[in-house]
Picture 1 (cartoon, rainbow, N blue to C red):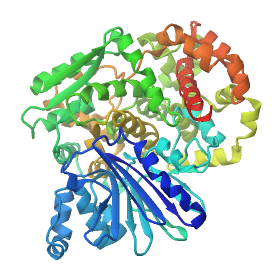
Picture 2: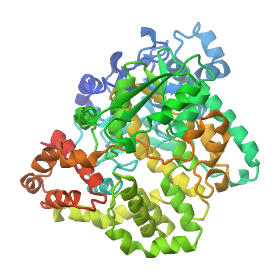
Picture 3: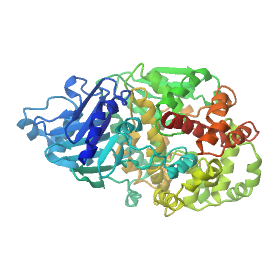
Picture 4: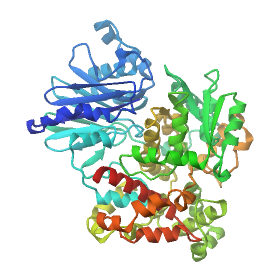
Length: 636
């Protein structure tokens, strides 16, 4: 696990930027605290920061060059099947060069690319972003893993190409900083920015499962090497019992592959089904697994540590609970805000930051259950979508009571207000088309609500036609009543734009690598060959995951509310963070000077927050805090 950055000067007038390589590389030090180095010639500069995981020797450091000195690789991630690939494809290569010089996956990837080029990318099992440079031809390959676990941002003109793992390193290449108001609008709807866009004009993210080839004349190729597909032909292949056995086998192998490490390894254990499955399977292949969870001392509604402890007890793991108070969380708010180099407002990032921070004191690698909800239908919105499609008297009654839900207090801060919030969203969504309903339930705010935040000047900078086109592209897979289309859209929108960004940024801020067995591509391909009924049935979400592993897990973790990593923000905004928000970031005078938002929004949101019906004002305020903090850091 590492950080990479690079620059290609297509024209000589851009070559002066090559000297920025050291500064850009150092911006990635938390991604790779163990080693850093650079390569440069008259056209290309490449930088690498290393977090040593596999083959921790200095020989495996990067940039890595082949024996001829012609090929250079910088690589971020892990290739779990690198030993098999080495034996299958590189035996003759090793004979020719007197064997590999390291036992690293980096060297295997380097020679696979030398011998087989881009064809070898689809053989890789793992997660990655890399740059591979051929000095003699001037050709460079950039590539990203199938589901977008590892980021790769780039900025391209006819003069140059700059790329990096993070925006803060990319900005060192003197690229222009101009806000993209279309993505700003999407950010305040979704609380994150959907890929491939970024908050800055001209800065894009290489799409998951894609590679790019560039040469002396510029970008030559941008192409997918893999695509998540719905395999309807497989819907009748397995009985439900057979499918459960297949899932256990595939997940067991995915977990086993991800246990490879030359440094201490553990697992996040929230007490939910997904992380519990990972721990149960990992315990088959390691003597005593280290497991970690966090609890909320001051808010029992969000605390799930008793379920995690039940799993830890069953598998005799070396379990550590970080039981945290409100003050413990508040101590790290600024750490999170300081690390974010692009607006990202999923507030559960704070809890993940803290979990990663404490876990890093014990291990360098952690397994997690990320991806299980998207792949196997684990969200409340999935259950709601299924109910909408099954027209019933209950649905009609809930939908008809929309005016009532409008009047009820709605927030995520307690069980009853969260229920009213969900009923309100269900009633809203039930009246919409499949695509519009998906977008509404994926969003925090409606288009009109975002417009109400923005100044007239900002609204004038939004290209509505382009914005609607981007939305159409993001929702293009929602065409029929096949429920897998909903999950496929989650895999392409929510997973790479929200969930994996959160995991990558918060883990890398603490120099810890997180591995997600549910996102093994063989598991994902299998999941998309299963019919809807295997995944969601009645009110039972992730049905096949729950049933396949039921005998392995404590009964008490079943049939309980799913809270996830929610953070109790509402009280903070009213008390400890009130001054930061309303006397600084949303102060009327600053908003007027800034010109992006309506000057009165601070007062409006403060009144809403303190009302009996705060609604989504808490999430909106957090999105504004994140944006304003970022704006002050990069524009003032």
